[in-house]
Structures are given as C-alpha cells and as structure tokens.
Amino acid sequence: MTTGKWRHCLKLQLNTSTNRNIFTAHGAGYVAVSGQRFEHSIAVTSEQIFTDWQPKDFDALEEGHFEYFLTLRPEILLLGTGAQQRFPHPRLYRQLVEAHIGVECMHTAAACRTYNILMAEDRKVVAAILL
Image (cartoon, rainbow, N blue to C red; front, side, top):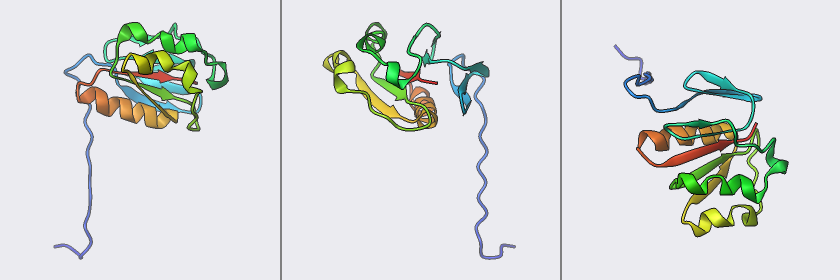
C-alpha cells in the first residue's frame, strides 16, 4: 500500500568485470582511482594513470602541460581545476584544439563524474586532475 508519495531508490553496483580506471572517491586535496588514493596532480585514461603530469596547481599551468596529451590523442580532455571551476587561457591548450581534441574545464568533482560517464560509454577521454 502506498501513501501517495513515491519512494525512489537507486542502487549503484561497481562493474568489476573490467580493468578500466574509474574515479571511486574525491575530496579536499585528493582523488581515488579504482581505490588508489592520489594527493597530487594526475592524468587518467581508462588504461593508465599518469603520475608524471607535473603542474602543482592551476596557476602553474603552462602550454607544455597541455602538449603532454597530444600523443594520447583523446577525443576530449577534462581538466579538473580543484574546488572551483576555472578556465586557463586558450593559448595554453591551442595545440589540442588544433588537433581536434576537445577541452572542457570543470571543478574536480564534476570532472571525475563526467570522466566515469564518458569512459563507460567507451569514449576516448582523459581526465587531468589538479589538486
């Protein structure tokens, strides 16, 4: 018997049949990828975690930090800019745009969620996370 109000329940279940990297947590000063915690800037694809991506924070971004992704050839680069959404100067990622690689900037939590969705859709996506 219902009381006139709908009860909504959503159960999420991790698909463990794949070895793809997914963001499993994020918080102040860290993200976790497939259960592994990181407290420094990283770049993530479905197959690899790049801990050698070097910008310390948003203000340290340089053109070379974006050139790093040219060899990966993603469809889209998601830049997680920390607790706030920030936008780097377009000249920094000009080479990616010229190579037809989309660049989206969002706060880190949104970048983690968006990456997981696009990766699950088999899109070639890279998440570059600044912490």
